[in-house]
Image 1 (tube, rainbow, N blue to C red):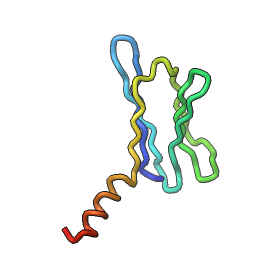
Image 2: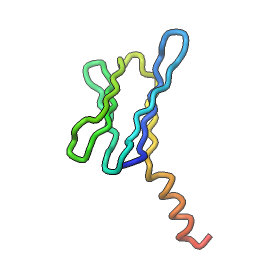
Image 3: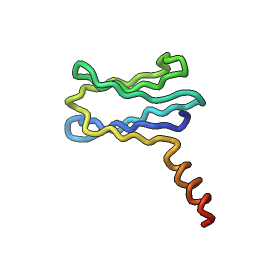
Length: 84
């Protein structure tokens, strides 16, 4: 869904680096796959074609933080439904 975002925090020796992969258009989604010692984060179209892919060594990944687009919108809609 447009607005879905995944933040990847990677150990780069003395410092940590943060990377973002975001679904930039309507109908696209972000998918995370962990295989063979690699973490792969991809932005996919509706048909499943990868638009962009980020690959990291699993041993270097400190954190994967998912930010779904619907989470913030859903909480506002629920607050309005109560009449408050």
